[in-house]
Image (cartoon, rainbow, N blue to C red):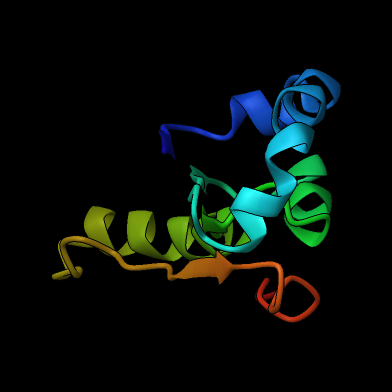
Length: 102
């Protein structure tokens, strides 16, 4: 089961928990797999609780860090990578405490 965007987890975490808690055993055994985007806020806590199989998140701080340099290089006519890869964080219940890059 794929969730496009993390809004069900971070926008409405309690309804999400209420919906999937009865399926916790199936999620834990991978009989029912849930993948979702983003690794912010309540999403990480929900992964820790085992109510989502995997999260894949962008790195917004890395984007913000690199963006000014890329813009300056473009203004100065320098070549920049296309795309500019800022990395992804991949989290599961087992890696939730160490998966997010700072």
